[in-house]
Image 1 (cartoon, helix red, strand yellow):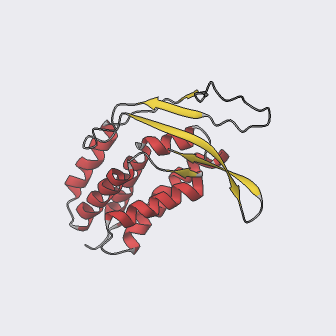
Image 2: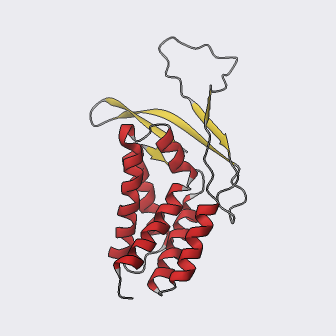
Amino acid sequence: MAASSASRELFTAGVRAVLHNWPVLQIAVDNGFGGVYGQQKADWMVDVLQQYFHDNADLQKFEVEDYISTLMDQEFDTVVDDGSLPQVSQDLLQMFSQWQQGALQQLQASITKHSQNKQRVKVTPTAPESDSGQESNEGDEVCMFYKTSILPYFPDYTSLRSITCTNQTLPNEKNNRLNRRTVC
């Protein structure tokens, strides 16, 4: 399909609808996992992903998953481990396929569906459960667990009921510093 700027913008709107409804990205932005420019990084991800689709022919779902996973790790220090990446990737691939085939009405319907299902995720930090048999040392690193219950964003992924994000501090062997990473 010859890409008119209006139809390309429609695909970009589809990417935006999918990403801005994705609870993992919402949690990362709302809790500052990407730093003070987290919202700008989320907006940037929309542009980068739509360009990724346009630059690569015949993408497979695992390639899209890997790319999004890498972006989340590099930009938000977040490892996506909640099982949502396959559905996000599938939604993006479906929208891109609709765009390629010129099915712009179907693409608009998909965008509308994602926009209507928009749910803001509320995150409540809770302290980790401690083992009663172990004593806490004063210098120990304490991880914070974030738990949230949401209505499933993914209508086809019925087992998604909550997302748990854990802040982990890991040693970096290259520069002997500690890195903070969030696993959702």
